[in-house]
Length: 116
Image 1 (cartoon, rainbow, N blue to C red):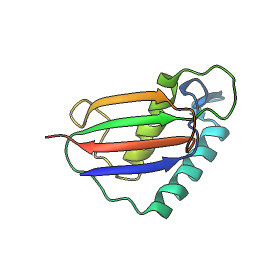
Image 2: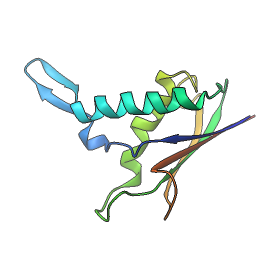
Image 3: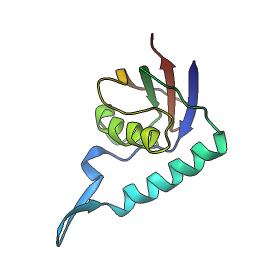
């Protein structure tokens, strides 16, 4: 099985959490991204892929600022798990993850393939 999903441009791993009085909490920017990504996923009505998967994350940068593709992976995988599109983001489920830059298209396109 294969799923292709569009998501908003991911938040960098460096900006997912902030220090608060009693520890670390989800940053407002990340909370907003989670909500927006969830709405986009619901609108696409994706199925679920049981078992092992490979994930391709294609990023189209909204600006010319430098960004690390590897810092965009965590929030993408986490939202796929939160919405039960994949069973988990550990080594038993996600057997391969690739992130790459593209010159045009959606801010973030995720292709999930079932792996035998």
